[in-house]
Image (cartoon, rainbow, N blue to C red; front, side, top):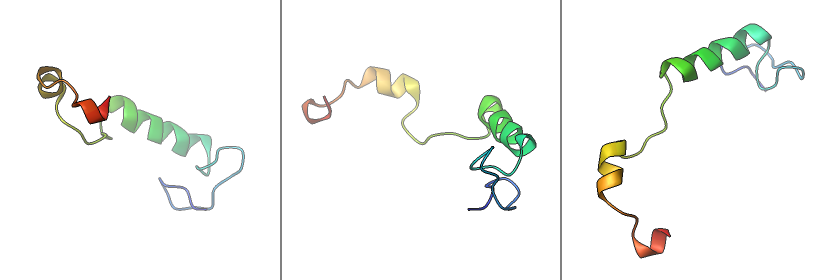
Length: 55
């Protein structure tokens, strides 16, 4: 398995990353909003209740 940040071999201690540095870089991307999970904007989702089959 390769580190998703720098593509070096993953270290079992930091899996899936190769080092604490790459793990911290990944965390920083989540905190800053660089990563996003696709979906409807929150204000649209609040206006549209889930369909019966989604509950």
